[in-house]
Image (cartoon, rainbow over all chains, first blue to last red; front, side, top):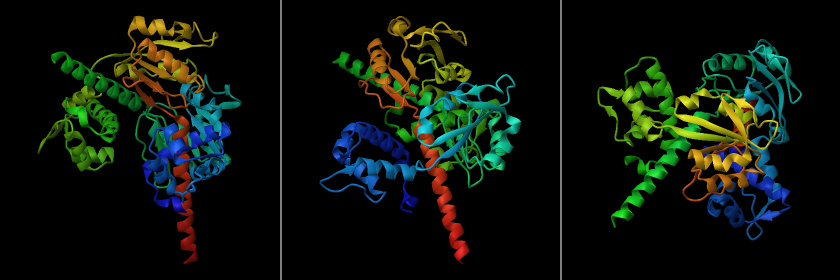
Length: 222
Length: 222
């Protein structure tokens, strides 16, 4: 119950802690100080302590953090201690890339179905999952009590499909369509807007180059 | 030169402004007030004014924003007023999904090459782009003065490939590999960690459901 008031910023950092702790576990590291962890993760030790204090402070002074315990606690917080059934709407390259990513399954996200409008894709099998027609989507969600849907379809069709998903009982939409979805209170949407990510990359590259050009210019004038 | 001290948070919101302004343009809207824009974008009008003030304030009191002007100014800031050449390293589903996404090209991001280690993929053509062997990557970058690389390969191979990319002159890495890359000062990395995005979705869904369970429990006890 402690996680109620945790800030978005902290939550958004938790998966990264989880990844680093998983790597430490694989390397056989049993405990780690906030300082060592801060060197690996390139954030300050004080931020690590503050972030992890939100969850009751799993560390002990002089001992550091028990890696396995912290890993499993963060897993619980993130909802990774149980299985989630997912369907993918849109079986193009992106949908197939998600279906093929075995790591999701290791984390408890089990892909149960894929759906597409394209008759040439319907009937194909991706990693053991048959692509079904989108007409079958709503029944499938109800029958299999699916809660999470990945939406990898063009933005023009996304709002209508999202409405159908919600009507059928979906509670979380992983939205790759380049548009903002409007959903009821009890449904969450996590956006992956690739174009926007690429624009941020472009911005950062351009502004860094401008800054360097200015610095070089100044040096040459000296 | 004004964009020097703009906060990361503002920058990260710019692509979204750009998207909404683009949609307004398509709808033939010539000008818009911060209030109308705030209703569409579901952020406060005051945040819109604050954000856009960072760029010298394109709005005029009583008139609102000139959509076309604001759109093109934001494009300039994001570096979208020029063309960028991109290569994709890793021609699996995700690499192909990126290559097939025509929208990137419309924004000035031109995919010039794709590379893979898999001999079964080398020689295939995706949207007019031939997949080359990764051995040809460094020469290709130098000959074609490529600055941006999308990295869609497994995390185990990503650090070594990133080193090669940087050595050959890449200045921006769009990193889909689930690891943090270490690069020199003059290179930018923009991460798209899909697993982490999925975990955030899972967290938000689970914590919403717990909260609702608590509320229902309280109501039942009444």
